Structure formats: structure tokens, C-alpha cells
View 1 (cartoon, helix red, strand yellow):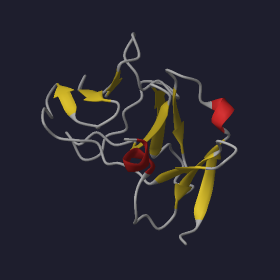
View 2: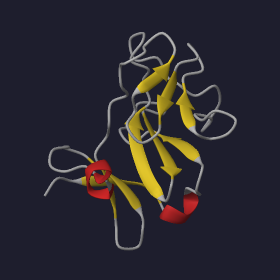
View 3: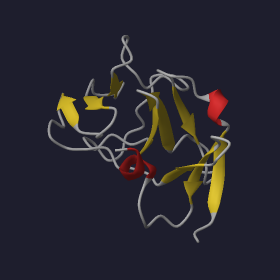
View 4: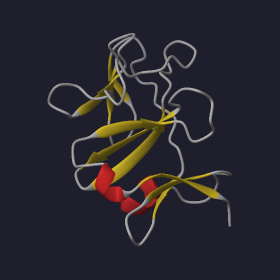
Length: 125
């Protein structure tokens, strides 16, 4: 079993909320989580348009005003929360990179250190 790192307790990510995390101690958020439709989705905090540009315009601000899309503040690109697919902007058709997250029985949210295997996104579909 791959090692995992706690990102947050489940109750710290409300429905319609996004949050950034730095699980590998790189000095900036490199992972973002969104709770949408009762599911948790995890993505690398890196726009595919230009060399992995961080996407939040301020801490934990990854979503559009109606909280239906992830938005890259640098380019205005919009991404589907569930699939990570760019639906509007300069990287149309490209996708965010999914991260391998796991929800515990207590609903705590972990990221798997080594990846591999079925992702939480796959389990929830």
C-alpha cells in the first residue's frame, strides 16, 4: 500500500468549496481539492496552458463566481470540476492532472504519495 499524506479533515472542505495544499513542502500549493455534488475532486494546481502556472488568484480561490468551474486566474481558462477538461480559454480540450486522493471512513482526505491504482475520482463515478 502506498504511503499517504493527510490533506484535511472532510468537514474542512464544504460543498462548493475549493482549497489548495502543499503536501510535498514545496513552499506553495501544488494540489487543489474541490467538493462538488457531494464528491471530492483532486487536481494538480497547474494550468496545462503555460508550464504549470498556479491557478488560484488568491489562497484557496480556484472557482468561478457560481462555483461550477475551476478557473485559472492567469489565463481565464475554465475547467470542468469532475473531469478537469478545459471548456473555455486558451487550453481548450486540455485537462488538469488528476491526483490520487483517498477518503477515509471518517471522511478525512488523503493524497497517496506513490500514486497508482484506482483514484477517488474513479471510485465515485
